[in-house]
Image (cartoon, rainbow, N blue to C red):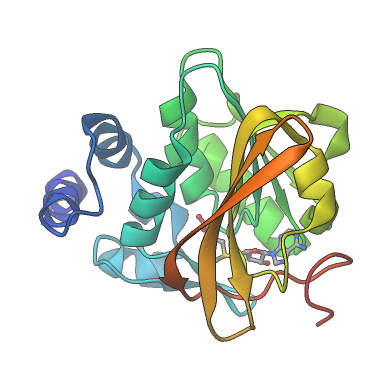
Length: 217
Ligand code: SAM
């Protein structure tokens, strides 16, 4: 099957399962060629709804999780976004579609090999101008580009990292999986002035967020 057709099937399945609810998220996921973010040996499985290995013991999140996060984060044109956990760069590209025009996605990855791979993937698929990849410990955020309208954390934290709360704009929203290294709740934090409203959106499983304000190893 051609990648475009496989992508249409994937999005249609995600609509039926209720993970994709809006036309905007459907269009974003239809636009981004997920197979081009994967190592060649994984590309055949690119449009099945499952996480896949991308090297260095890490995974690209399952499409339904990318859809849930895109819907729940309510990304809008012009938003400045921080993603923690770049991995392949796929999720950042989906968010770049949703903040067009004038939006920007900053994404940070702790493993240099993956940061470099994501840069190449984003360049090859035409997202390099809208998505900036930085190498480092994303539990500390990326203060030089703060504040962020939206923050998306793609790895599991033991608690919401304080620097990420501090870097959220007034009215800004963050999604972060919080819990142990084997099971977490997807938490949405909304900033209202100096106060933070916290909602639990349900169970999920992510690889650990490792760093100063995350897991230690
Ligand atoms: N969003 C990615 C994609 O579209 O492929 C998938 C992210 S993967 C589930 C989680 C990523 O978080 C891994 O690449 C891992 O190396 C990274 N990570 C873990 N701790 C981190 C930290 N403190 N700062 C930045 N990245 C981190």
